[in-house]
Image (tube, rainbow, N blue to C red; front, side, top):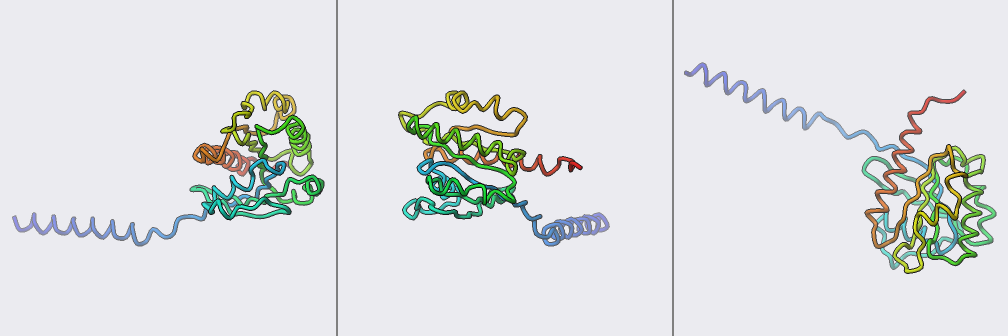
Length: 206
């Protein structure tokens, strides 16, 4: 009987030691990958508000971006270093100067905007989709302000922006969003992260 007790005690000690070693010697988790993104869209589309909410910043301190700003947006499996560019008329012509080094694109549009602004947004998106430094990158297109009565549906946006023919062969995601449903916004960014990860595993082209 005593031998059985000693054996059980020895096994128990080994089990405790193994658990302790697993906990203490596991080491820090591997670093999350970081991706450099550019975020573009007209003034009033809601770029700054969406990014600030994702960074858990106070809404009282949100000021529309006039030049550019950079935010590190943390997610569970990645960190997105987002360079947001101002969307005013006198700034958009300089957007392309900030494209270099981008690994993905976020385009935010106001789905409840006037016809003129929607036409301008379409032209800017078309220009970005065809730009040499962006045309091979994953795009996340956010149809913002879906909580407004005049908001156009995703299907209406897709048709009006002619995304199917223009973006054929490219990797893009079009999602509705609003500040009222930040979980849906986070889900959209998670889909973009998936595209970025897939791009990491693609064989390099010679």
